[in-house]
Length: 121
Image (cartoon, rainbow, N blue to C red):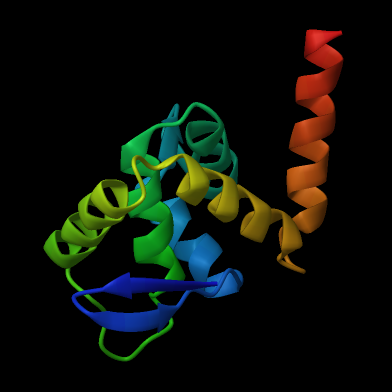
């Protein structure tokens, strides 16, 4: 998946480095034990149409680069996308789809979607 940040096209990658970076953002401390909930929390926040999750996902998805765009540049790019596309709906959908296609995350995403469907029904 590609995304434009500061007039430059970036390839977003959803691998192990991506997961490690999300785990830093969504770290849980339970009785002194710290563990990452990155994929789970990011996917849940995307499902709930939380714009801040888009920023976290994109920032993690470009973390493989030697030089990454700043948080401020990513924020501006997300806002620009919203202006140009009459909202963020398509971006939410595309990011969720990409997470589900990632070889290292697709089983996790399927599991979360299955659990959500069981809860509904």
